[in-house]
Image (cartoon, rainbow, N blue to C red):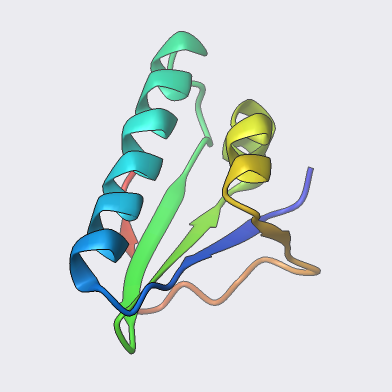
Length: 88
């Protein structure tokens, strides 16, 4: 499975932050259930008041349903992750 990019963009910052927190809470549950697989990485950055997340191929694999729920997009190549914070 390729890297996936997920963007959360709401005008209301409270809704935007709540959606970002919900995403990470749901990913945490999937991550723990998968026994915290090595190489399942998630990176996050706030860009122009938008949450941008990148999920590594392993993270994309274990969180496939979650990424569909949040309408992620596959990446053609590994993204440039400078300025992103590693969440997992």
